[in-house]
Length: 240
Image (cartoon, rainbow, N blue to C red; front, side, top):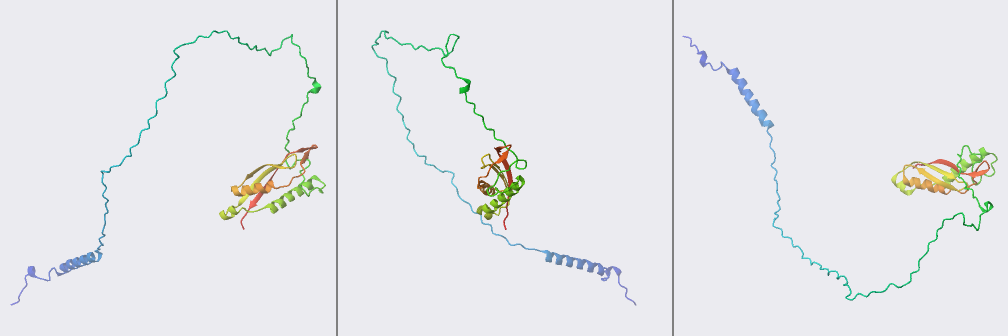
């Protein structure tokens, strides 16, 4: 007689499903165990300062300065003396300064006695168009006006190179650049109206000093009379 198993009580019936469920649970718990993190608990110290609200401030007692009252006005005298008005008063007569037809003019000023002074007008002529350019000391031997211009520009460059001194403050700050200087040679040959424009005030001050040290020149001439001649040069300050 062959023994037959009941299919409902067969243990191998759902073994594959149970294996998959068990494997999934094991993997889930293993993953959670690996991902579990713990953090150190920090200890916080709370400091509190007890401040009493009942603060009593000692207010110093000041003494009030009592000023004395002003003195009373002088009282009227008890007896009023009446003085008779018999004094003679000298009246001042103010004479009129206006003249009329009856007035006689004692002194008449002649036209020849009036001196008319001519006010000298300052004329400014550009360096490029002036008839006779200003003569820098050392350029007197130049014959033509163009030769004097070339000599003038050469002497100016030599003067700038000779007087040039880099300001120590600008060296420490690393300041450099070009300063444009505009000045004029007046009708007496002196340097005037110096104006500078540059990147730093220390460089501007040094450029002003260099130009102010230019020696006196022979003034420029226009139509036989000395005139004012403006001129401009750039001075470059560059750190090596």
